[in-house]
Length: 216
Length: 117
Image (cartoon, rainbow over all chains, first blue to last red; front, top):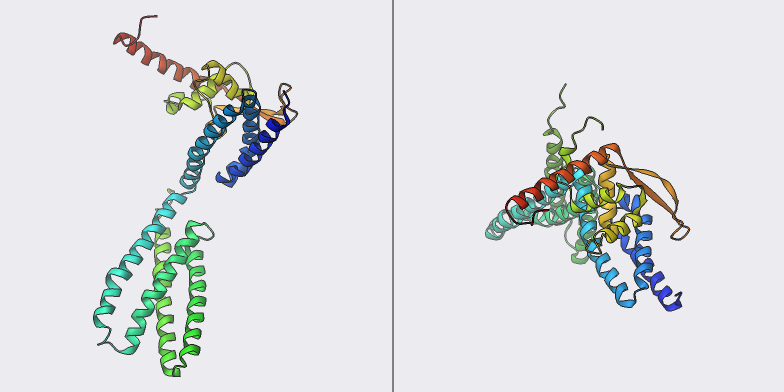
């Protein structure tokens, strides 16, 4: 009855299942993870008595159960914390910003690139490049829940500024440009960062001020 | 919880109703619930750990069940397990759901979809 091979495969199964529990939200896993692993081990033990094919059935059922319920627990956690709306609003902001950059700013830039003063050219160029980067970092921070709201906007500003500063420094050292051109690019980039920072901050603060006051 | 109307929670999901039924005649731990459901439905309903504990979490939040402590099951290994039991409100919810299903079955009989008992 106590076949060592069968026992080994059960132990391995239990370990793999315990690792797969990482798919659940951490709070759910903390409360129920140990019990779930025990239940899975019990089922493996009972089914293994019927043969190897039964263990495969246990796995098929466990994986389908895990996929369905882990997704549901994540969704529920987002819904309870109002997180789902935050994520949807962040995606909406990202889409609006990308659409504005690609459909309005970029075509304008392409049409008038030759006829505009150098600083305006640099500014539009900066608005497109920093806009895409700023927006991407803000989206990434919010979706991974590393940071949210105004904090995410500030973090996106810091990261984008660092990237832009590094690129400008690289461009200046590589091209050996005159100081005047460098200052114009730096000013354009700084202004563009300010524009995107203000727009994102307005967006996240506007959401807060839109919350109706609590009844007296 | 005493003043709450059980009808507010109806209809229950099949998993929640099966758990209520499994706990109707005594407290059990998670795997005990799964085995009871398995035996009662002759293996037709096989509840996975995620479905079981997801439902248990919601039932605890709704006050339908409560934990009755942690201790080892003498039939299994020496690992300690969490036991669950029905609350009074949980029992009322189970009764309300059973009555709702019974009325549905009566309607099916009246429409000759089921043989008369």
